Length: 381
Ligand SMILES: Nc1ncnc2c1ncn2[C@@H]1O[C@H](COP(=O)(O)OP(=O)(O)OP(=O)(O)O)[C@@H](O)[C@H]1O
Ligand SMILES: [Mg+2]
Image 1 (tube, rainbow, N blue to C red):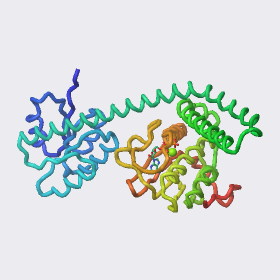
Image 2 (image 1 turned 180 degrees about the vertical axis):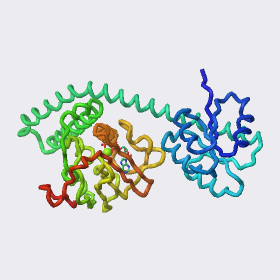
Image 3 (image 1 turned 135 degrees about the vertical axis):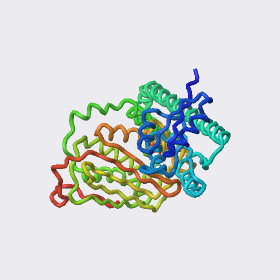
Image 4 (image 1 turned 120 degrees about the horizontal axis):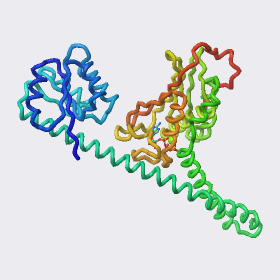
């Protein structure tokens, strides 16, 4: 059964709200109104609208702020800004910030109906695309789970036999045959690595690490992660610059998995950047949290890819010459951070670069002076 489309109108002029209600009343919609931005934002969370009309000029929270909140709450909600003629420039700005269209005041009933229909069609398309993507992801997840379980044992056996055979035959094979043998082994090793990565993504139990949480130093996490990515960074001639606030707090956590999270981000920064560029890593105290930032000037991430990069097995669609990964690094990083009551976020622009930020709750009463720490030096690769 088709559910009714939900429409929310946010405008401080009661006359606009009333006329929208009257015009759209016959259209089999579930309608709601708010006469200010604060109420509008809370209705977005409670009412879950498909389409929101929002006046740009309102006392209190402005239409721009409402648009921003909508982007945070659910970027798939279609927004249309209502605007007076004199503010057409800001309507264009609103569209640049994600609004789908704008409706100049005063508007006729037909104009409102037409723009409503277009807005809802857009919403339908966005939801269908999202459902298709999710379906594709689920298929990939199931496929990866089955394939990796079924392939792992036979492949491990093949790998074992190959090692044994190459040892036994090494004195009888020609140079060329030995090289081909090596190539087979390398390919099988790569496959095994891929299967292990998939399996780790699917089976990793991050709940259990919580039992062994202890206070750990951020600079030790960063320095271990940097060290682990060093070979790739050197190969691409990418130096990193690390800045850690002097009295950085400790965090309560599991060092191994936090290092893994930072390795994934620094590894990506190096992998998705051109040779000779630069990666900046920083860590600061922010209120009750530690923020670790990893910034690159690499290929960046398209707007289309951005909402999905933390999904298991998702690899970006950007056409570049970089060897495809397995798409689990960020999904795993997100889960690791969640297990630490933290989060990971990203800002990125295609062609310009990306900044990933890890946010981890700090142990505030125990700041540690870098000079007092018996820490390994933080490398400058
Ligand atoms: N710093 C970055 N710059 C540009 N694109 C990035 C960056 N980090 C991640 N991405 C995009 O996000 C996608 C998902 O990243 P993720 O680390 O999960 O997987 P991956 O790097 O493809 O493979 P792996 O599992 O080996 O890490 C990547 O395929 C890439 O398109
Ligand atoms: Mg990666």
